[in-house]
Length: 470
Ligand code: URP
Ligand code: ZN
Ligand code: ZN
Ligand code: ZN
Image (cartoon, rainbow, N blue to C red; front, side, top):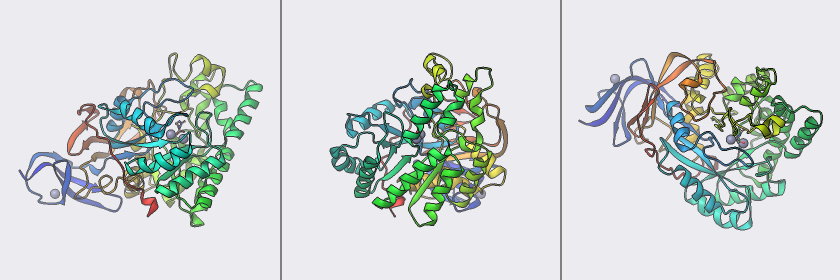
């Protein structure tokens, strides 16, 4: 046979084109896209299906120590199993630097956590929490050269927050080594002020998590991060933009000609602040939806769609940050019952990212099919230095594909999920469009929700420079 695998009769979708074509694969790489491509050891009939580049989720947290807090519900094995079942073939997770540690030791630690466990290809962003002179001037340039070409910094959280001076120093270091800086934009002092005020008034239920960090707090921090990036003259990625007000800051900066990129996530088009009120009398189950920035309101959903349609956002990521709901380390643990500030932040969402964007976006006519591919795969590859290895369906690219049924109706329920968490925040939501098969470097890795490859089949991906640097 000429090829190992032939995907026949589907509609190939890339960020630029939609075309009826077959895809021929040999040695894990796409060799041809077209017709009459020759023989193959195995043929997959993709009639009625879309053939798209596998999802690349550039914002997931797996096996990460959140300080202080309970362990995450997903390590690399269950987290990547869930990602694969959701139509993804690559994730970029975070290697978090504990204060007092070198960046090198932190990266090695997270490699140990992932080693032999991943069901799909993975990279790491660094999280810089301790920007010492040696971390910035010696370690960072080396690590960027070795394939950790992006890192995240935080404007809030006790264990991670950087002050303005530190943010400027870190951005300056990124400029030297052409790394892409991702910024978590929420104002630390404002959140602490609001949290203490709410606690004094006895307003401690999960719902008040949202009240403690309203859009103005995110808007202010977004503006500050943009201003610092302008001062240092460095591209910046504003991650998990939650609503209208921060979106407008990003759009304003882009219209001014600044190199400001932005990401948004499923929770900002499919959950609202009201979900955090919970269904039970005590409202404690509202903790299921607690993440930061918090879900907003319907006006913000509209603004996020405006931004997705209008090119304000380049990436749609999950920000998968899974915690259990039940049990002593769950979101409603004893400490968390005493105040929302102890509810672990984050939700499991890596498996439902593609169906939610496809259904609400493509299915309901808000974005095009090609936008969908750009937002879920191609732009992640370009911005995080994986292009042209990942992110398209074309000769020479890794044969990472998702075969997608655009008409399949499903209701999202916990029993369909492959993650470690004991709930999904999207329980009961109906979607049209679902992954049927996920192919990783030419191997059928998942079919109809059955994960077929072994943990460890995924490879570590050293990444090149971001396209944001031109
Ligand atoms: O609540 C969230 N999103 N937790 C994950 C960490 C982060 O800030 O992205
Ligand atoms: Zn054909
Ligand atoms: Zn964040
Ligand atoms: Zn995150």
